[in-house]
Image (tube, rainbow, N blue to C red; front, top):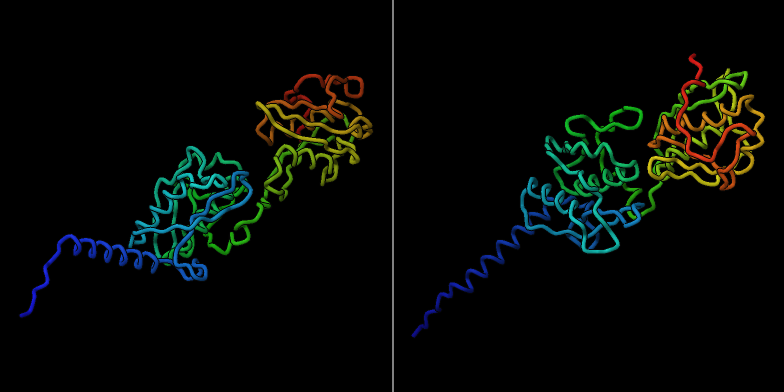
Length: 318
């Protein structure tokens, strides 16, 4: 006599759920490029930044989604959330989020909120690298283009960044961030008589770890690059420190700044620095000190004891 097997609905349901989960996981992994996998691992990674904000860190990521669209949404959402590790944090600062995205012929256009345009350069480039490295792991994405609202992302010179691929950011994975970016600066130097200021626009490439204010001071010490302009700060002057607090830029120079034979009017040296920093940075005033001491009169005339605002009266139109 043959004994009939009982049909157990409970175990059959569990089996079906496990089977569906396995199929979805397999389908999800099939959307991942082989280049996005490490030996012995079939998953993907979400890229975060370290707590110091100087490098990227990757964390293993798995998804049960089987469609490219859902995976893009899930990965972007995961990037905005804080990771479990206290050593890392999200690359998305407060107020920055993805408004929309469009995938066409392996090119992903991502539209960010307007707050993206107010990010610091070092924050922006880490976010850009993290998003590209994370999403380009998917088979259907070869290049990614960034937009702020509906305007293409541009560099500091107004040129569109354009399409980006993982190969553009491989050198930043897990290494300290040392990115050089172009920047236009409006600097003030002395006329040939040393008694008036004349502006010069210069294009430089600088380490994004350096503040714009420090960059401006260094460029002023370097001197002008065109004929008819004269230096305003002695070239032997050393920069002790440059910092910004509450919209005031604090510039601390050594006593090389006191031995100034470059200008006939001490106001030219002082306001070349003040005007250049206020025009090019995020400060509204500049406090200058020499060896940490600001309670002095520069060349016996200019009181440095208080922060100074820009003075356009000394500028000579060309």
